[in-house]
Image (cartoon, rainbow, N blue to C red; front, side):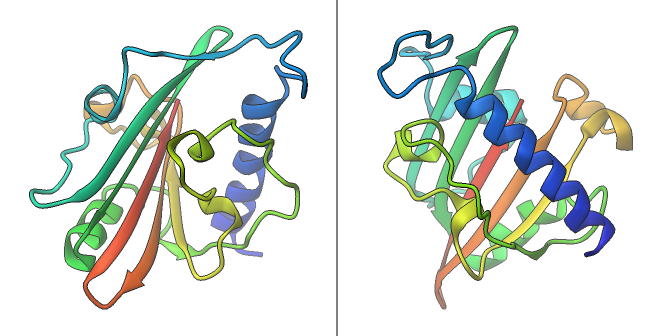
Length: 165
């Protein structure tokens, strides 16, 4: 496993914990909620990401968890625009092939809220993640972690998934 792959595995375990540990299947004891006033514009602003002109299927949400928030953003754009965006998040290594998680992510906790499959579970998706303060990204110093997944849909379209907290 590469160094980036190891970092990804650790981060994925933390994400699964953040996304699912605070809720039970019945909703009792749930300590998180979706911010009903926040969507794609708020998630993009937090991440300091410009959604490319002409992007489609733009979706976003903010999940409020104890002492933090998880920002989600997804859209479909050209492969060239997706690759350019991906380069911004290669601070700890280049985009690499995603190894799908074996631990299921609890239903309704992340991108499923946007009607999308979890990128962590998909084959053929490339991933990069970075701790902005660790690489002195002054633009995103308020973010602890940000990750991007690129899913090639066809020759002209790539779905971009972004998650930050």
